Length: 176
Image (cartoon, rainbow, N blue to C red):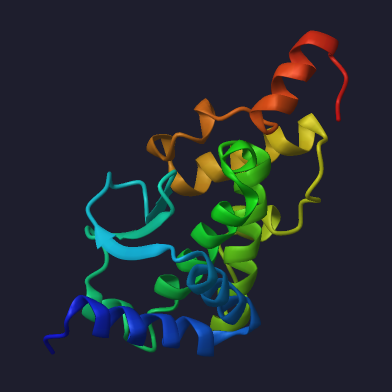
């Protein structure tokens, strides 16, 4: 199957939109904001990623355009929803464990719903954590991400809070 970039994108976005309410909302956000979507190679520990220039890419190590269109490839849908969530959060929140916890929970709750399967133990625990500013909770989320995705996912370098809140915490030692 040889599609143009535009044909692939329309089919992919349609597939994501049909998957769920979350998928439909993510696609609507992408369309309204004119966010570019594509497939591009990245490091092994990344399934997909977003950029400050309003782009979302699925990692070409794991996804081809054709693979993203397969009905049984649920990760191509849930990763898209995850990355859109980061763009909705804004860079300040997205580049934090708080932002990652939010996006991981959206992604893996959706994956569990669509697949009907039980998740890996680390993910099952992660989706039950409260989304709050408790530092012990966010440290636990970071640990679970590391356990599931490995060292090179680089969650260990992210601040627990969005950076402005993290800086405030370091000066005041008060949790948000």
